[in-house]
Picture 1 (cartoon, rainbow, N blue to C red):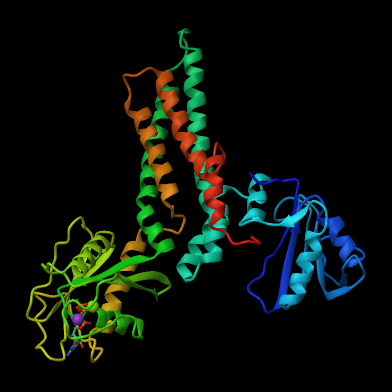
Picture 2 (picture 1 turned 135 degrees about the vertical axis):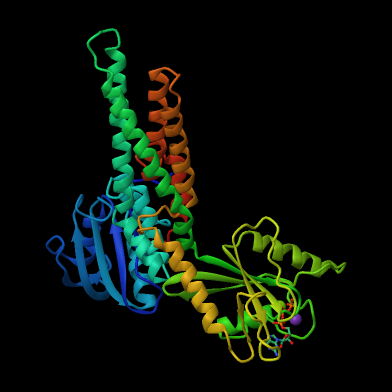
Length: 440
Ligand SMILES: Nc1nc2c(ncn2[C@@H]2O[C@H](COP(=O)(O)OP(=O)(O)OP(=O)(O)O)[C@@H](O)[C@H]2O)c(=O)[nH]1
Ligand SMILES: [K+]
Ligand SMILES: [Mg+2]
């Protein structure tokens, strides 16, 4: 566990050298330490140009200094920023000087955000959104992350938690008055009607988890098919570079190769795999095992076959969408569309635009039903599923006692509370913050 009495600091801007290097300081000593380095503090939240010196009076650099007295800061603690020129030696000297102050140390991964969480500045979903925002490479990843950091999802979960808590309170009140004859039964009816409604809202939301995970992690598209179908050639054509080895020898590809594509702002992960066939050759067999494992985890399989041969449509443990692609249309007459969804040639580029379009419309179809207030992590999915199950038990256990049903409602609220981190999440924090960079 980290020590919150420490004052932490880190270079929060990117790799050096750079135009500017922003060093962030947070904790009880942040303002004092900054004061020593820059002579006098500027007004809170106002930038001032200062000379930054070591305690021996040596000039480190000149730069902008800002202070954010707590709790009105990112972390909720007293914080400061020193903007120096982004030279390696400049930043190194400043960090070294900071480390020499008593109670000051370099921040760990995500420690600024962790303090913000501990001080109630952000909840867990917002913190995860922030990590995603920093990692976002495509427009849709950015939009999803912004939705999460801005509290869109948290608001939804908190409203639901409140509804569950209110329902429980009403039911418990009814339990307390159960002996008295004049309590109308209709309160309970209203509560359960609302819980049934909540059940369908929750399951609708949970149905968006698949798409949320696709937006965050990328649509997994796997190229599969017989040896020499032209899989690696297609991979190279889509990557516009020679990622995979292409030869006329059947069984060239063994390892699973992967590239990232950006299609209409969506992240797409494209995998090239070993050609599927019966073989005794040890290395090729392992390649095929990996190919089938990758295919099983795909969102979409591009099943390639040289025009004139059948495209495989069934893959073990895969029930997603298969697009049948006839290859080498430059040397074969194009099929009438019965055997393939699309014919193409990596040599001439024919059909590549149609393939791109097929992927675009697949993504648009998947996205059509959803706003971007989507669950996007396995953690969300698991807890939402738990919550929905408990709610289901509360709603359907009509023969159980009201106290039992109220307990199920409490469990449903508890699982939702774990998503935003309102309750009982100490065990999750190390995992969540380990994916952050230092300085955030
Ligand atoms: N004429 C023509 N030849 C192609 C085309 N695409 C691939 N080839 C040729 O087909 C052969 C096999 O291509 P690859 O891309 O290695 O096929 P693969 O499916 O990856 O093969 P394995 O990795 O061995 O399973 C090579 O000689 C390619 O040059 C195409 O569109 N037209
Ligand atoms: K080949
Ligand atoms: Mg290959």
